[in-house]
Image 1 (cartoon, rainbow, N blue to C red):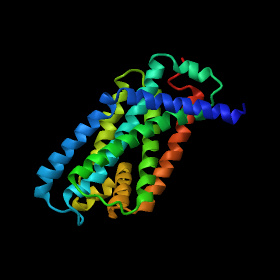
Image 2 (image 1 turned 45 degrees about the vertical axis):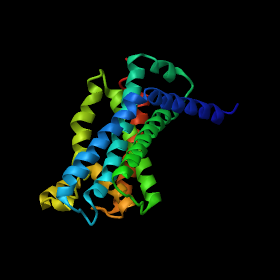
Image 3 (image 1 turned 90 degrees about the vertical axis):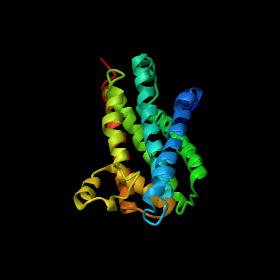
Length: 258
């Protein structure tokens, strides 16, 4: 068996383990976001949205649907990897993985792909729910898929880095609660930044999630507050930078070796 075949088997095993982990507990991992997003569509789309009126030429329900899908992708890609890799540290079976001949890049890829799969599955679930409330015609399918996949990978990498630094279960909730959630809510999910005063618009441009949400909205509705190619460039920069940082942390054993 060649080295490439051994690496492929290791990668496939890690991905299957990750996917089986979250599908086995689907009541905790897939059902809650479906219920939460249904409530978002009922409250913000039907009840409040009817009073707000159209936004950027679309009904409010149509306008927020891409943002809610992307919010689900971001949240669940991140949370899957941070909880899974920290559990491996906490239960001390990560050592077995690190002393095996599996390269660090394969270990990272296995966890990240597993997290991205969960994020994209939840995103598809939210898209299916959105179709019960509004009509969505995807204007640019390739852009839509590319933004969703790249964003899921970026936040899965973020979850991995969070897990390496975490020392207890409280540490894995700090970033999602105090950084990720505020940035997501202020990232143009529920509104166009054109509604904000000039200072608010300028400040919003420093929020990376704004670019991801708007690039995804452009793929579905064909409208965006920012240039979509700028969004792609930013996503790729984050992807490369976070991959390099995660591999460095694995190589140095930060948060893993004592």
